[in-house]
Image (tube, rainbow over all chains, first blue to last red; front, side, top):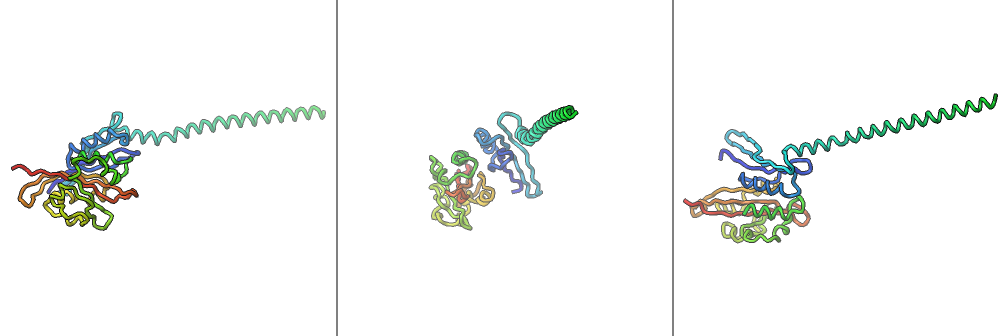
Length: 128
Length: 138
């Protein structure tokens, strides 16, 4: 046998593509893929055709079917990006909070200093 | 047959893990049962735990409790079990079809499935296999 072909179903779960099953029949693999995407555990699926030529020792892979919940194929990657973006947003919010608290401290210290100066002036006036 | 059995296998999954042997076999498998076999893979060489009627008649006679290497070549069971080690390594279902010539000189076309199964402790201890075939018309 010079060339062998198999169809691997990959499922996108928990932020990663996982191998679900392997079939020797394309229609069977695509049908199984459609069944998987209908279940709640799978966000997206891909059927990858892998062909291997043992005479030339070359292998080739190509996506023959892809589907995901909610539309475009690239959405799983966006989900990952969103996850990495969210901590920096939090950091920005934290910076804003820090700025506000610094202003409150400066204003409080200023108020206390003015109070002390007024008290000092009063004491000097009384001693005169 | 392969598709229907995969549906049962997936139906017995609690979440994503390998389903339990009893959870799959306790389902209403109907006419699939004579086409099934179970391998116990806890020993160094896997052994046949059970063999369905159709497979008993086509290479499986007297093989319950015997090692997988005893399955005769050019029989449905012998061909269907060939790739069990790939399923043991990958721990995912694999389906495969093909043809072979039986001892009567007929070309037999077959389809098969092997899927991993767990025991009560959640260990990957069994393989569920299934196969059916037809004689190629000349």
